[in-house]
Length: 342
Ligand code: GAL
Image 1: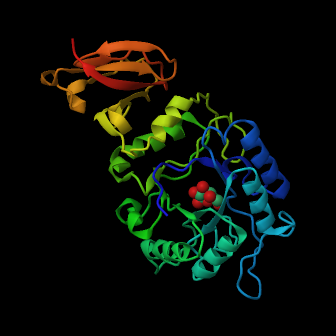
Image 2: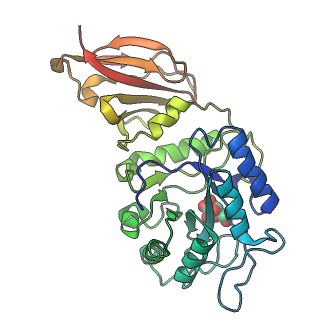
């Protein structure tokens, strides 16, 4: 399978950690539909670590925890599918998962076949408890092979946290997305650190294998498994459309200031998205000289800009766009349409 736009969905870890069970997952599936998340494009529901028994069965098959999932995983998958969602699960390239449940090391093919039987559509694959003599890229290649041959389309979500120079080898493994950072927690500092890490890793993001900055912490407000300080939230369909743009082109930095980042992303059909992110603790008025995005004066072209958070028509700008004051930790995202400069 090939993934043309970044996968979207919900994962159990950040909110519930090991406190997962069949009823909770079914309730979550209902909520993803009822709250409009599915309609907004969040179509994967993923069960993270702590879903299995501590031991494999006598045939070396991994077994769902009988207490948490008394009816097995197939019935959970069936329920999730009945809501129009896709179903994701979690395993690990090492001997154990990070929470010390059985890992898939040397059981890759049997586990991929089991997941396919259950109706799994997505596999998050972690990196804990890897034997020291094994190279990570080989382990991910092995699971990549197993998934491609399991008879079902299963999205392969690698989770080696960007260590061991993951960006250099991850595409070879068949992964469709790769964790480019360590774990997020629900705090501004965490979001800022993860965002800044993308500056060097952004060239590796693209169609087929997307950089994964870990989960959104929107709406957690300092509660749940990765709770810290909490964050305010903003969500918007036009912003999601930028993320899901069919051309799948990677954004690039137009200003290398790591605290006050300006990004541009060319979109399908010729528009361009411009994003200003104030990572500092003071007001900023960033700007993008259009020269930096290839629209120098001699082109005779300008940009008709719309503010995607407010919907405000910002009119036609040539040569440069100077943003108004952006509050600390704030951002502004614009969509620009190419027009003739007057
Ligand atoms: C970490 C991973 C987290 C979560 C956790 C489960 O390694 O980065 O996202 O999956 O393991 O134990």
